[in-house]
Image 1 (cartoon, rainbow, N blue to C red):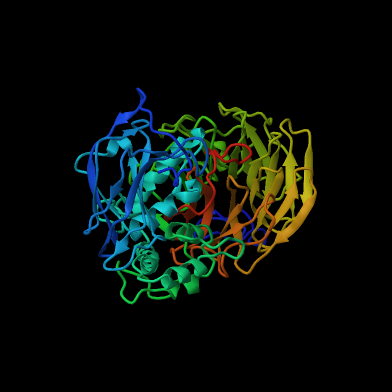
Image 2 (cartoon, rainbow, N blue to C red):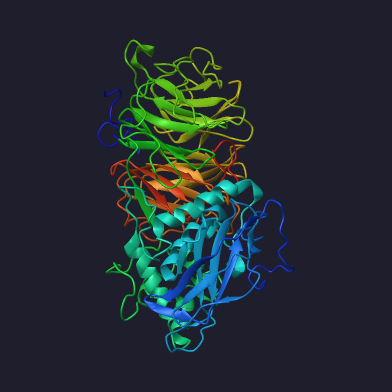
Length: 617
């Protein structure tokens, strides 16, 4: 139903409205002391390869990821040295003990020689195994360039120096999910991509992964130092240091995916050891997996729960839930009923309940002016057959959860804000707050003082409303505000759909910048902030995403992505919502492509659900 003239808004794609992302390794000392919680080891075998060529005389090391901080605290598990034989094979005996059954285990290979070459001390390769409980006597692990690329991408947010992997004690879930994501990229037994665990319908970027693996192999299998020197030079970012081994070179590439893409692609080996591969230089080195299923039907807003599951509102009357690795929890029809109709906004509260804004409703419910639906984390409707419709809801577009359990709603229909309690009752009277001070708000976020900030699509302002509705303040800063977020430094960041820019405003109302721009910023829609304070946006018309350095960096406002943004090779088509998970993955709802896309390991790990000020978990 056309509710207003096109002069006020840009039409979203069909049916959707839009105005217009050894202790040398771990630096520890002493021996492993077995405790009652430790799990006895199980012997297993593996092989170390460079492409199809065995790597002999390499040292194999086995670790349990740490829990005392990011990139630190890993435990060495082997009580005796393990080296590879001439055919690259190795055996891990049972004389080790995992710290616990759920400890995340990985292998590191160092040095060795491929074929008749001399020993190459610059070789460091990695294979992620997963929980200790998953190791059995039939386990076979292949360590090669493919396993290394897969593990470094998925675990980039947890990798420190000297191949040390660790998370905080409060982010064991993010670490666990990251290890699980490795299996979507690589088959651990075969060392090939895609992974054996990738769900049906997933599109895994095996060609790009294999291309990077082949580029690494040129150094790994080199008889001289020249191939490694070329790799290390190309893998040195503008503001970083030159790596000294293959693992650190790859980690530089993962963390600077727009840097030196052509120089890296030019290092192609004479014969590619893994296929298929890319036929031309990529725009960037991001790895993104595309997921379908779970009833996706025009996905719009997305959010993550504490388990790392991704929820997507679908404009065409359904709701989707996928696991952190893309497996559908909702049926092929999605969750339906409960008032879901033209579902556009979504948030997850601090109890993992899911809230969805429905732009319209049957006329008998709120005179057709829409509702808000609440579901439990298991998909049970908590708001009845029709959803909540108190508090002056009027074509609600977006929602934001507060740390106190309240839910703020942006009403596009009458340009107001509704505040609902955790039980769905109105806290903002019968007509909501802020009427007359907003202009078709499309997004809302809550700051650390429980004040709500609304993005006004049809004006140059954003509006702040206090918890009791007594304070209403408009700040002139923007141009067609479409997405809005608050960072760790009390800055409000706004995606300007009309202005092709991102604005920065303090919560006191000072405009730091009315619009950071770059050629890649093209009608931005969604916006999210990761645990390190970096800003991520979707470019709705540019079919890409961008990373913008945040207030805590020395390059605030600088766009890190390449000329046209990240992900131009992923099939993005009308990317709308964006969210960052506790593993450091960036999730995007691909409205035109009817998929959810995950950019693996692209951001800093971020606490989920995203309630309150964003932070590292």
